[in-house]
Image (tube, rainbow over all chains, first blue to last red):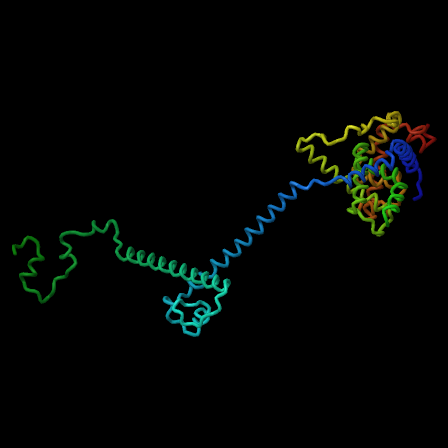
Length: 192
Length: 186
């Protein structure tokens, strides 16, 4: 790079600085040897930050795995609860068939499958899910019944104010074909 | 490049590397020594590997720059945690000590270095690489990890600012900073 004017002056100042730095620079061999010694020094086996990061990562992975499993479990009963066999009788057998095929009934009508541990686990999990769904459904029904009863027997708090001893008279109308005596009873101040 | 070749190259560039490390460490000699040592350690351990994508000097200076930045960050963190430099070795020379003390105390150089320190880091780096290390702007841009256009900007602005600072401080370099440019003014 060609330098002109003030650049040459800056260059001169930098050259002076460089000369001074070169005089005070540590020897290469000393720096190199120190670096080599540092390289040979055994590293600390336990790095705290690395251990903390690893622990955090493991925690995150475990919680993710647990959550995904839990999510799958909770999702399965919901499917069953939406269309339980007892509540929806309109479903055709062909529609229900896949679920009934998948879920083994305790009656033992299906042919026995090889009872591997995985299969057994699946079956027990499914049974548990079905039981849970049935319980939830029963609770829902009971709650609905309670609510219906409460609504039908509800009375306004001021209903008693509207009732009086002459309710019968007020609610009934005199008929034309009634006897004169009966009609007199509607008139005020008339002895019966 | 095997380790013997690397060592030979590093030895050739040692003083220039030290100068660059000094610049990157705001002229703190102890820190510059540490940085240079760390750079050699990185090279020895293979953490910094020369792949021949750039000139060796450019690559080495880029490694020094990165290492110095990392050390500076670490130092800042340490100071935030109020951990004083207990790890610092006792044999480290103070910035003012050594045979250069007399030179450092020369007025012109003090003012020049003060002016240099007052520049933004990028501008200081660009000027250092061009004037101190005799690198081209392209090489300086490679070392700084920026485009040549940006490097040129930093270089020009740095020059202008340095001149202004020196003018303000009335640095008497030679006859005079201004007088030399315009002899008729005397």
